[in-house]
Amino acid sequence: MDVWFDVSGLRKDGRKPRELRAMDVKLGGPKPPNVDGCAWLRMGLTSVLAHCIGPSETKRRSDEVQDAARVSCTVVRGRREDPELATTVVRTLETAVLVDAFPRATISVVLHVLADEGSRLACCLNAASLALVDAGIPMRDCLGAAAAGLVADEVFFDLTRDEERRASAKARFTVAVLPRSRRVVSAHLDGAPLETSTFEKLLSRAIDAATLAANRLAQATRDHVGEAIQMRDATAATPPSRTNGRSTDTEEVVLLEKMIYDVKSAYFASFLSSSKHLPTTDEVVEALGDIKKKTPGLSPEDLAAALRTKYPSWLLDDMNWTELAEKMGD
Amino acid sequence: MRHVAFNGEYVRAAAASGVRHDGRGVATAGEVEVRLIRGEGVSVAEVALQSGSRVVCSVTCGLVAPDAARPLEGRVSVSVEASVLATDGGSGGPRPHWVVEVEQLVSRLVRDCDVVDRDALCVVAGEWVWSVRCDVHILAKRGNAADAAVLAAVAALRHVRRGRVERLEDGAVRTRGLDEDPEPQGLPLLHVPLNATLAVLDLEAPVLVVDPTEAENAAALAIFCVAMTPHHRICAFQKMGGAPVEADLCLQS
Image (cartoon, rainbow over all chains, first blue to last red; front, side, top):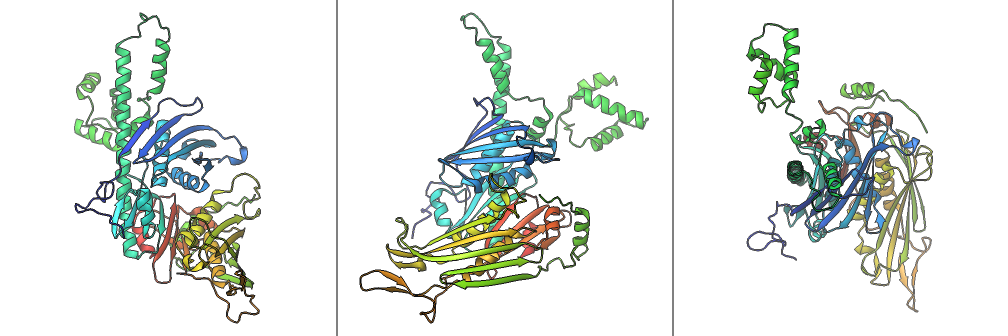
């Protein structure tokens, strides 16, 4: 019988039972010309490289879906493809992506499992979701997945391969959730038969783990975008100099700018601030004008209330009110 | 390819009222017809559901040399294939997703979940072990093919009989034929799981429908597969897509 805890109650790799492994995220970066989004994710020693191509035209007419985009996925593991993993990823992404936005198109995801040291499925799902984010494909929410398993009657998060092997004698649950609503997109249970009460406990723990993972991914994306914005501002402040005699500088800047996100796009804003976005003053002025035209003679308080109910997704608290007042002229 | 338009609204409204569009109650499964055939180390189970799905599963047992890495364990393999008629006439190309899903479910139950006791399949350690092949063929798919596939696989596994193994004087191994063995052995099954597919038809007022028909499959917002042993222990749980609340899960048990 192995010892799964040492005296201090830690796992073999020094983690607490409900702790995820260290995550390393690399978004974007150099990628093949036909690839729209790219992400590399490392969870502990498991690492997955994800490329996203699309939305693009569907190659075969028979594959087209008339009213939605088709999501396809290829998982390459070592030399072989893994159709089972691919099916799970497709089914999960189909519900996370707003497929209605691209009728008859194809969004394809290619995953390379570079190293598998446990929780392979969760890592694949996370990497695929990051690649979609990088490609700028609108999603309901930034998907997050994680595994939780029963090892020695204790629920462990984010199992390593070693633990997985032990846990398979008991049970392990891989769950993908949309973190904001905590809704389960897909769930897979492996292992020995479970009592109903244990099942419920394990499921709710697995959802916790997946939400934790999703938050980490979202944070990593925000950090990445922050860096990209800083880089853009820096390059804008110092115009490319030709003093060193290299003519490639401007090309480099253009390339750099291509890599940086289109932070003004509505999709991007909706992703960053949980479907809410900061309206420009012009937008607000226009909206207020509309309301005034329809129901004249409202007090300022009533106006503000009407605006809030009409545009619930606007972040009005962070508005620049002085600028707005100047534009409105009152 | 069959083009059938289902009236999702009607199906949902019917299920919400408590009587489904085909007259069944919400928690009533359709009628099932099972036919079993047995040969020497072979059994075939044919399952036909009320919805029109038809699945045939054949289980074959034979003596083979074990895997070098696991000299004490028998071999169990599972394959699921769909006939051309079941796959909308599309031949060639990769297998459709639903076939992969069914295979995942059946192989998870039969292999990973230790339904067959692999240690008990060992005859002579490192030399001879039983190999069990489970081939599932989906002949027609009209809703709930997954349940039919699991039922056929489990029925065939329970039905198969193999003759006892004798060691001859020269050290070779021989299986007795069924005609000379008065009591042929069955397979060592640790538990007998059965699968139930539940379709969620409405998210606001969740209606869980057991054994969905093709129309209900098309109208469903999410589909669960839950496999349980007769002792109410959960062996496998699969959910692909959809977005239900957690409370739904407790409901079904």
